[in-house]
Length: 420
Ligand SMILES: Cc1ncc(COP(=O)(O)O)c(C=O)c1O
Image 1 (cartoon, rainbow, N blue to C red):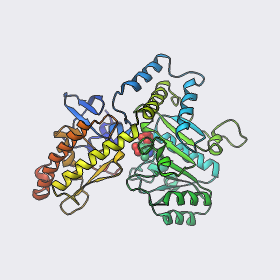
Image 2: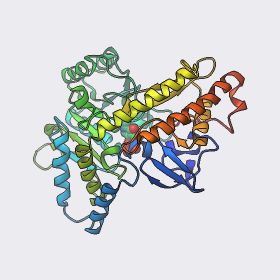
Image 3: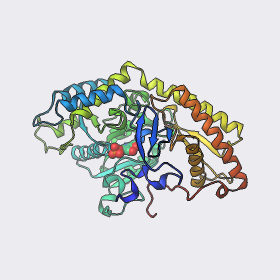
Image 4: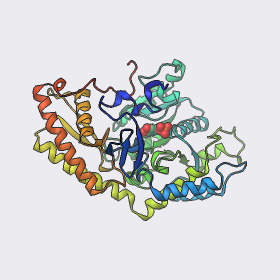
């Protein structure tokens, strides 16, 4: 009934081994239960949105209480002002905010606003960062561009992360035409010293809008975002995911001189800026208010880093014990860990990724990444390390004897590919 078997590509059958649980029926904290009653420890929950844990009681309660008061009226709710005030208190340099439901809504809105205020049509995106939006300006330059007119895709250009010259050469080749520069302040590789500062200066010199996609970094690197962590404030930034602990809410934040073009107090052409039916749904806003309160009062971000460090240290010990350096590696910041699998020749391998996922699942862990949440206790982390140890013992044998001997079924495939 459902194309791809899931409503999010990253949850699809092609992303998990054949023995993976087919359907989840319940989650609590970092634990989930499948339709057969099997329990798993989960990582990267809700595509990194559920940072406090599944069914986190204070957030669920806040959302439920708001539902009982009604969630969508003919005029704004008071909550819209309260949340704007609270959110802007967190994000230095953002004067105004507009809420929406999905991350893509707000990255796309940022691009539109940049085009409107500069009168330019080209968009420069970081080609090393995996995802910015479901919309054509981004999808048009991915493998999955079927259905996107070439005329749209041609407006998006790519530069390389940590390589200022690659962006400078785009500006040189398209003088006065680049409306904005879109990137994550940091994804897997950290910025070289001074890179983000120089990137911002270059944007300002060329009259381009700097947009940080803070969907992942937002409430993981720092409660003030990667922009606070790195001390570089963009002109616009886009938040989502963790903002509502999995409830659908996102935010476009930025400088007043840009954001006000979506408002009523100017004489320029008004930008259609995120006017949606469900944009300010009460329960999602209440969830965000409560999520932010919990982050502030319970030091959530330091806990994410701490638990990630515990996991990283344990997994690195397993890698050493099994002599898998160069074949299996952890990457990224402790608050946002991913892993890389390589075959016996040292090449990145989907077969070995699938085998690792399969063996973890057999040991009770679902880990498409090792992105921790606030709900991962020391015990969960230690159980995960034990599962990794047993998965890597099979990995070693598969390197020697061939992965097909141990892998059940077909391997996983890259999520955004052109053909099946
Ligand atoms: C960095 C980044 N930006 C934007 C998005 C899009 O967010 P959404 O799926 O909520 O539209 C994602 C989603 O995975 C993301 O990881």
